[in-house]
Image 1 (cartoon, rainbow, N blue to C red):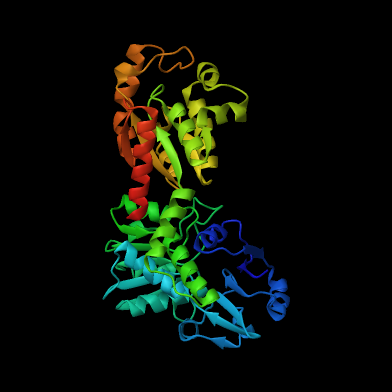
Image 2 (image 1 turned 120 degrees about the horizontal axis):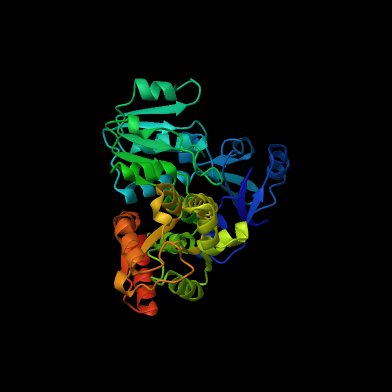
Length: 416
């Protein structure tokens, strides 16, 4: 391996794709057990590597040189071999700083809680202090030096204004977990989560629902990778390259989720977008049939709508943790808030709003068998569609026009 990333587990990693966008070299992902780390580092059969959980501190004894930022933090995420010697750096510091600047979250004179006690928490501590935080507290499951417990955070420090999560809680595949209940922090004004898979963690989504500024870790991941490349190759990259690469990765990884009434054109548009963008297209109704061996109409007619909705939610939860999909949902998927929440983990939700008078009743849709039923469903669901959607596209436009608008909206969102 010449260039790559080492860690204990890497099933969640986007680093290979990011480095492919930065430069033309082979970047490998290498999982190492803790017993394998010693042999790997002693052999040092690489040109340069990145290091992540849980080895950011454990690689330090193998280094001949550590730069000032890494020494101050006590954590290394970038290792370069030059003329037989091994050098350690911490580009996470610059990546986290860039992410916080990008988010608009202000740490100056604020009370900050940093969740976790690993290498990234030490990076966050230095960043918070350097950005002018007034009081900074580490938070851990058990009391230890320089760390309070979560119970103390809730009872004594619930006036915290900024929370930074450096734990892996909420990371794929455990995407339904959050490291802390932010509803108990009444002065909270900013949430920073270093987790980047899913793109929008539960912690992030909870903050957004409360109207709190929040950011997840993809921008940090891209920024630290760019800074690592500069160490790898001893070259400088233009500052705006971080934004360009972030935009490209976000567009590549985000799911496009289509919601709307039956017969509004979700399947046609979804198939068109998938072919145009080189994505996989999935239809939740078809996935339900694959899962159960029965069509949605058969389930509804024989077992009732509640039974169908339960299966629909199971299917949506399964696909919501995946990336780079075009997803067409059933017309009633928005009836359960858990579906919308799951789809937002990795997806941008687009409401295809077609005039209900243009919707056609069909026999295979037992909940929309005639004009009266269509209007009833439309009126019941319209506000739910609007509140779930990140943006709305008129269903009266051609498929090509709708696709162009969605692409433009996604580009604009990724640049913000």
